[in-house]
Image (cartoon, rainbow over the protein chains, first blue to last red):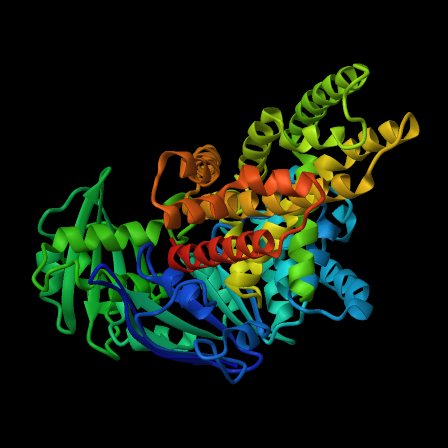
Length: 338
Length: 245
């Protein structure tokens, strides 16, 4: 169990993390989501005792981290964002060193090291120097080192960054598998990862929690404004104005590109616009190429919550639409988007 | 305690995977071999006192220059390397205190320093085979090496805690060690008897000369032990303050 109470951190008076509270239950994976610079790593460093908080409390496995750091840290396994291992050490040596460092009894040490190596699929490289391994292997060696003492809480800071797609899949499977024995806090900015791996999501922006819940509840909250994407042939400048006239439409944004016009519509809850849009298009003599209902994805939730403050309420419709379109066409925040 | 042993072991053995260890070891043996050669030459002169000649080995200028250089080089990487690579984050989030980390690293570095001296034990053994040798001063000399080494390495550990750059750590460490070494020499420049006494207490050359005569003075032990603790304390505080940066 991991509990964080009104955790705050300021650097030279500028708040980086502001009054963050949450709880991760045993056997749960909490996805910690936020854009770069939102305060994810700062929060994680405070949870792991690497960075002293300005205010607040962290409880690891029922023990107060700030009052009794050594005992609390026995329950902690941490995979830092910038994972630095000792390149000259061999894999088994490193994991054994971590075991000794974390107080695993010498009698059990060998079995525990073997177990951790097997769990993280690194047994085959056990006698290789860490410096010779690929990034995916190194990441898993780091993970093996973090869980060799069977901590109750695992804190993983962007565990899949810099891995190739195959390795990402492997690491994700591994994390899901670890859920059985550990409480896991996982930070990431890769959205599909959260949906695939996490039970619950916490979105943080500018040091504050802006939303939390399961992926489903978050998506539902957002789909209160169902949308429709309409693609028309030719560049039709009055398309958005025309479609906005349809009853039930609350918002319309147009982007024209390469001989096509894309209009994004938002409607009031429960309204089905498809038929009305079709009739309107036919009446005006336009050619309808595409008509797609838009289910709010986690990207929408994320972009909406995180970008909200950046976009003024009465923003230029085109800018908003373009932003939306970008998120649609690049449905994954992959590593390239860093 | 287990964690401390783990850190000491890792620190000690990590020296042997870097070329630095072998470069230092080779240079060390070359220069000490030369000093020993000079001692043997001197022993060939009939009227030299034979028994305590080994003490030259512990008090020559080569000895001091080497002590200061080697300690600052041996200790430069102790903390700065981990801070630079970022592995300090994994280390400090393990259930170990900063004091344990600093002590472990200091002891690891010190053990390596003592290891460097190990081959030189051969010299008195050689001398003893070809003549009479008073082992008391030799043991005292090695005790002196261990103590002065501990003192210098603790200063180097502190220098290493100050920066992420190993070269900077080595230079700062060397300057601090040099200052500590030189402060006792100012005794000859002051007239105030109290100050003279204090500076004499800090005079490491005198410490070493005593040890090399086989005299173990508890004041010397207290001086070294308290200075080591002081610098390890400073290193721990520095490490705590720089955490997360």
